[in-house]
Image (tube, rainbow, N blue to C red; front, side, top):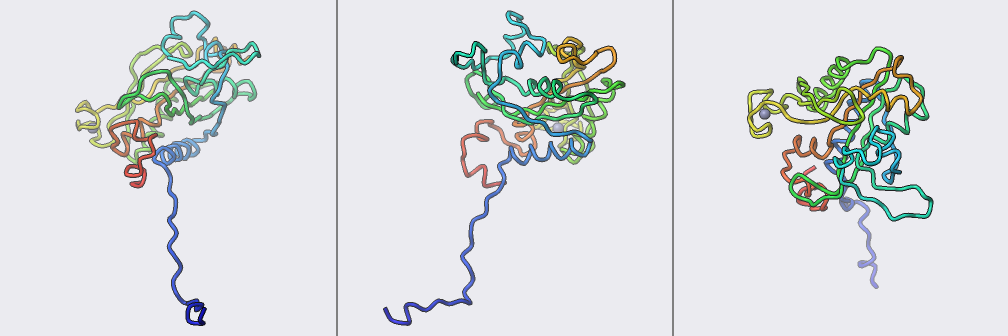
Length: 259
Ligand SMILES: [Zn+2]
């Protein structure tokens, strides 16, 4: 080889290396964690493979309770331990695990993956992401929840957001409510995101059922708490205008490279 071929131009600019970036779901999870951290909440985590006890019984859904039909469950094969295991159907078992190991007052938010045994379409997937919150204190009420959630959604959507509650049923809360937030795009005037009603159905919530508190040795006469749970995928779809949940999981770079 001649010297000319060995020449290295030390003044040439370096090759540009492609940089990675966050997936839209990760962005939303980080936004949710930031918003709740600023409200004094701790971020908690738990296993995705759960026992029947933590996923159902401890949440006031005993065996043969009709409410179990609300969750289509992936049961795992018996592993010889005698404990029935499943892929968690919600992030709520983390509340139980946290309350078992921490004394109130408690303020946590739990973002994480959950699973349900069902066919997929534009709004349903066998895996999905939830964020779950729990606040326990001596004077906590539905009014405190309304304030916290209003602050949270206003931070998340960077817009002043209003909250409304409608009566609903979940076995682990009493009373239970559905939460709607005012549309972050049209502020209640009506648009395609809110289907012209000005409100978006966003989460389920309620006051923690006394039986759930008793189960983890927290005295329900002294301590009150609220809990809520919503879909992270749904928030990402609303925030970024994604019309099919499957796009969040199939790794199509035409979608993820937009973030
Ligand atoms: Zn709207």
